[in-house]
Amino acid sequence: EEAKQKPVVASGGIGNGDGICKALLAGASAAMLGTRFVATIESNGHPAHKQAILAAHAQDTALTVCFQDGWPATHRALRNRTFVLWDAAGCPPPGKRPGEGESIATRPDGTKVLRYDYRSPYRGMEGAVTECAMYAGLSVDFVKDIPTAGELVERLWQECMAAHDITAGTAPRFRKKSKDVRIRR
Image: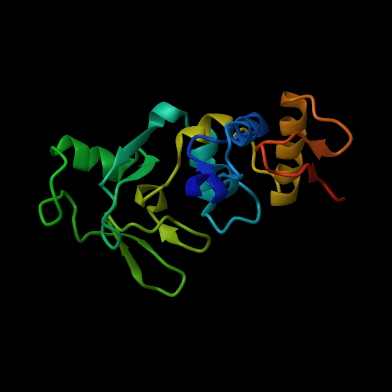
């Protein structure tokens, strides 16, 4: 009963308005889109990361512990050269990975980025940035362009409305106890 009163945020694999509305209709209070917003103009993601997301398909990603230096957790990332080297070596643990300790890129402040670092490449980094952790979820299949964040939000809302025949700026009741959602422009 308590769980019904707490907000639930759906995430993972959501990359368009239809996915958002499906999550809301299933009872979520909100939807979180990560990969889709990396590929926007305002994102601080490195242009090479954005282009890699644009070119990728879901099968180009892997759920992995490859990029865990600094954040020992499982992540979904694009299969890049670092991942391929690690995978070909049998997915060895830290301390036994091929190329470990090798500098592959440089941050704008001049500090080196080592292979297997968990941080994704961002604007201003130089070097082999495509060998860094290039996070991307299964929603890469929905990424077809690199719009502004505002354009993307508007598009997502239009897709959500079209997917469920929502009209006049109101959304249906997604949860039994919720009030209609009004969009103010």
